[in-house]
Amino acid sequence: MLTNTQLQSIKKKLDDRLAELREEIRLELLDSGEQSYIELAGRVHDIGEASVADLLVDLLFNEIERHLEEIRDIDEAHARIASGSFGICIDCTTSIDVDRLKAYPSAKRCHRCQANHERVYAGSNRSSM
Image 1 (cartoon, rainbow, N blue to C red):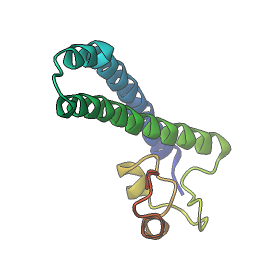
Image 2: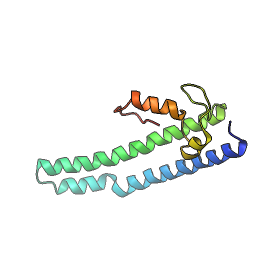
Image 3: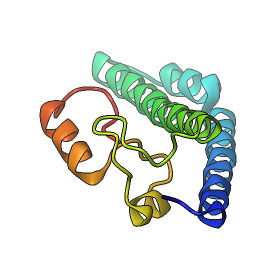
């Protein structure tokens, strides 16, 4: 079981990471925006160059989607904190190791259940943690 001090420390890590992710998304959107694609597409001379332009845009959106998935995980961790279920594995209901939570504050599974989840869902598009 987590002490109040440990829980507050983990909550601060979650809050700090949430702020970082929001800023990263904001900067990525500002830096690349539609303008970069429009400029690149304007220089496209053949279908191969068009494919590269599309790939660059897809990479940007994939990066943003990863950030959004992590934000969803953090929001879920905050909800578990509020409900009193934080630190309890969602699969086997045992306590998640404190060191795991310190390293990965939004962990929702114990190490054993996470490893099993990753084996079962390997190759899926869902986040594994």
